[in-house]
Length: 361
Image 1: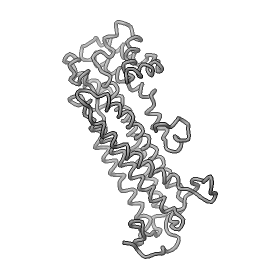
Image 2: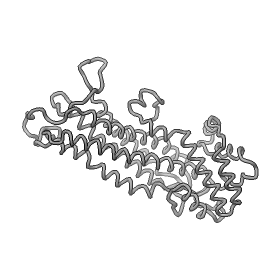
Image 3: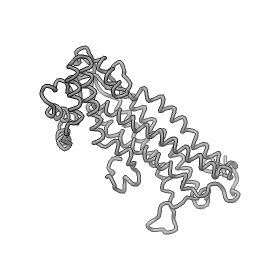
Image 4: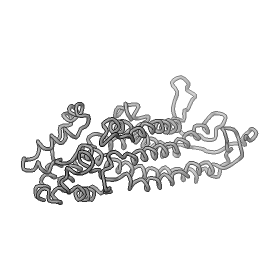
């Protein structure tokens, strides 16, 4: 998450090392190089350059030594890393290969397509983790599902149910989230290729053919036109992240309330200690699920503001996306990790004795 140092306490509390690593600049630079190399090969496939030059250029791009410190210095002025990257690539390849390096491509083509490669990997991981959360809850149901539990409406005692009834509320949205992700993938996991103003005119009539070759090489969808000003799939992704963390936050909130003294409907192993009160065992993971859900939710309006990409390209909204989307992904990874581990930390679930009090309205 923004402000969390690798190996620091904030990352340990609310970060996710797997997602952070995939979002790291070194990995994303490799994604950009993959895009550049696929473009060089596509130029050879459509006859813009010879196949031999295209392949030699692609291999040179893949092996090019990139000075990341130089990219950082120059990005401060350019506002993005690709101008520096393309200059370094052209300087690194022999002169006879330079016509196959970035010529006709634009920074947004590279960065957007590289982002989609990153998202593809992260979302595959998230889907696997959703399955693991569901499996962990199924094991919890097997262990404690038959135990009695007082249902609570508006935080007041209502009518008796079982632990299985409450776990079912936690599990039910997970299948819907998996289906939403499957529905989203074709709209999101697509090549970006538009050239300087999104019309592919810089590609000398070969834009559609180049796009077909690049999409096939990168295993991405191939839209008919560039989507550089239509960020709705990314906003839709943000909504999905918020819904996933929101569902996990509901589970965390329930467990935190169940762990309260006087309710005692769940007993957790370990937990968080207090520096002032040695008797306390705080339900830290459950609380964090609520925090991460709220954090992701408050980022969503910013991602929706970034839908406004004025005219043919926005530096304002595009940069806003870079600041908001990665922390949302990290927060979702953190929530999935906590949600998977939390059921295993439950030693007992259900009422130890009859619930006192009159059922509430």
